Amino acid sequence: MHNEPESSTMFFKRRTKNLHGTIAEAEAPWQNCIGVCSKCARKLKAMEGDKTRLRVALKALVAERGLKKKVRAVDVTCLDVCPENSITVAHFTRSSIRVMNVGGGAAPEAILQEFGY
Image 1 (tube, rainbow, N blue to C red):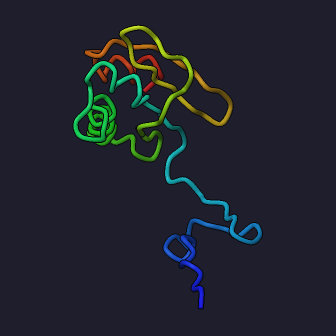
Image 2: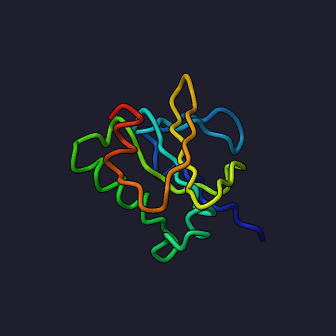
């Protein structure tokens, strides 16, 4: 007999609303998102295991500045911008998406400042 896997909504009941079937809408605990391209970072050897060093640094800086409810830094796969010797970083908000290409040694402080944090 085939058992259905437990729905992920069981773990996040306070933040989800079932739409229909296996689709549920989730409430994000942050307002905006910064995505760091792991494919670009891998080309520049800017990875620590399976995480980009830039995302790790951005995430730590966001926490240090108390911005966890405003912005979240995440690793993403290819954004189809593929700059030469740079990493694509995208800032996703409800109203826009801004994409930048930064050098492998770019300061996370400068990136957050460019995005208005």
